Length: 139
Image (cartoon, rainbow, N blue to C red; front, top):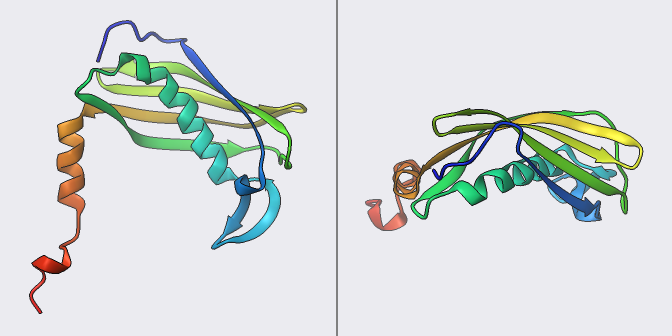
């Protein structure tokens, strides 16, 4: 990891809620509102923006944990801002505090933990988790 990442650094993303972000399961919309799943995605994205400038060519960040509290609903065409603030940096572990806001106020808050690892280590972990392929299975 490159030098320079410091507690207090921030990153932000802004977007407008679309129907693709609505709460739903198996293609069925439950509520025409910004989903918790989408909020988690955006909180992780804002948090990743903090680490990007500090990754070496051979490194990548991987999710370690997410803790989110969805506070208020947000409907389609509403503008949302998600901010991540670096609150803890310990070796290769990066933890950010996240907040999501719409025009009316705070709609969500949480924490995102990322672990920076060598790409080769991540590939090794992924390979170890793969199931046997059909060509490896004896029929």
